Image (cartoon, rainbow, N blue to C red; front, side, top):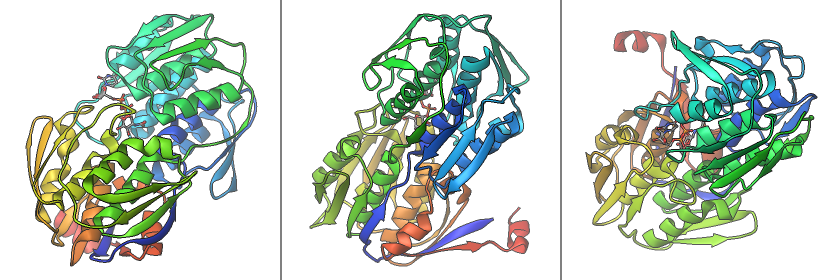
Length: 428
Ligand code: UD1
């Protein structure tokens, strides 16, 4: 096991290049199953969730060739296995995309209930509702979802809630279904659009991705393509907030500014100078931080995946700020206990966190309780005057490509060190 040791108090200065989007690439990797030929996928981030997806693809029978550090060639046209066992599915949330992709290709799939960050109860009832509307039936047995259809048929599906995962999963299942599928109350996140673009470049006929109504005309077959994954909105937002919290000046490169509008607007309100360019954004500290209130919402609202990071910044502002979690429940506030060890003054009541400004954090021994919580601990540690040790960094490595390398290039004092076996045993 490893941990990060961070000596904070140094402003981040310089340029950072953002990697491909985690939440797009995980769906796209599953979607390669639908192609009848090899796909070349570029701009793949170096994160552990990608490694898990590749392992699942290989175990299903796909040939995966590494072209370079961020490019893979995947030929899933020879896959015959349609089952993803518990041991693999439990490792990440996005394993649910194998349900949609395998169902779309073979009219059957057996996948264990997904794992991932523990953000409270995370049902997949909307995914299953969508598959059922497409004429599939399923059983849930011993944690395995066993789903099949004689023939998937297009249908009208109106989701009860806006769900990124359910929207993408139904797209995956419906691209080759017989007839027209209409998804109402669809999620509009950039990665939903990216997956639709990927499927369309393979020959699918999907219209309206990025709006709340998506129309999918089923096609007979999909072919292999070369495709580059969009930049990661949340990785970009995390570096923007890290630049702000350390009172730095950072140019965040390889981004789509439009995807960052809600984050940019809040940073400006907090008092940062944010300048947008064609494919980069600069965040510069120019004076005191202002308090503000934030409510997380589905896109184009403020992303829930940026909630812990912005809470760190608001802790540095004078006065009281309020964050309302509008996507997940209080499970998304698990980082608050860890941040309190560093001096945060945050009280949580259900979906609402009340943040009292503390001026600055003090170093402490803390742990990442989930992926974005881990990012928040790093930002707090970078802004603190003294040393912080962050354990459970495996969560952070699920979604941030080479984070310590990128931070060091911006002037951060961050090291990844092994926790000796003996200490681990004593701790158990
Ligand atoms: C995805 C992202 C995650 C992000 C989240 C919201 C991936 C792999 N993960 O997660 O990083 O935080 O979008 O932007 O892309 N819900 C149901 N029933 C369902 C599905 C969802 O009740 O069938 C609820 C969830 O519990 C949650 C809300 O709907 O409260 C939104 O969830 P959803 O958009 O589906 O998030 P995920 O796909 O799990």
